[in-house]
Length: 366
Image (cartoon, rainbow, N blue to C red; front, side, top):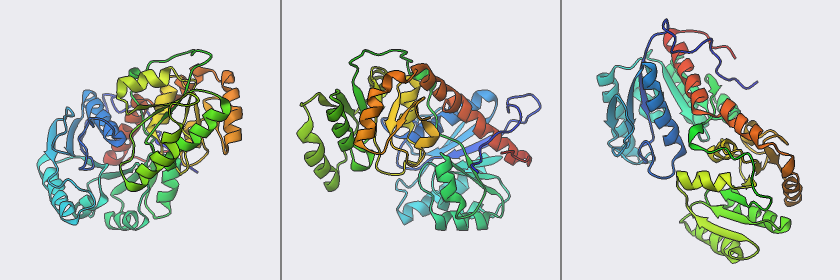
């Protein structure tokens, strides 16, 4: 059975100790990110929202990070996949631990950076927002001898991780609810919106086929992929349809534009062709009250309740029927789903509870 974090009470109660928490991010992007970077946004939320609760928070991240942290330690290496950079960053993290003296380390970066720290009794959390490597998680769990706990951004990711060993808990990704304007109603001719990277696995070509069959406007937003495969995909399967039948490309969007785009949509249509680890954009759509039409792969069944928050479909025909059924969706349910399960407050509380249980040696109830 999937395991979630539910520990009695809130950590901000007077009898619960305040902690020194050291959080690490991948070295490629600053925290918070300047444009895209879902994981970096989650880290920034943790850094900024744990401190008002009385905790001291240190951050190890890209040198250009601007997150308001108690102490900041910049990575020396900038490439996660480079062996020399990995060695430098392992030393950087070791040095940061000696200076900061944390009660717990929370890594959103590479497990390899924890290597010299794994045998210590210092509690460590390794979080995965992507597919965990069976080999690295297995040796990490063995070397840590009980001092390393894993979290995944979905039950789907945790099921993969548990096959390699270790203790795993599901803590979903989140959005800042207050940044998204709830729209209880949209116009009868409101467009469908595709919002994601423009690549095959995200299903932009399928979104076009679905919108054309349904004779509905489709606004496509997101970054194009600047690889040979990405360019070919754009030129052959996206560009020929733009400017016809109500299909438009609006480009990459910032947070304000995203809020406006999702809020005006009849539904967010992202018919994925891969097993999505989570997909923060789906929670962002729900926060606007916008139903989601996607596919029942990866974490999507954990996010979207069929017929309540949207529809999970397996074909163009099923998606066409789902679009016709959109008037049956109460947009208030979508917003409530985001507030109750994917808000920053809910997720920060879960991480805080996990830290407390590990530092104090409490048993976590499933």
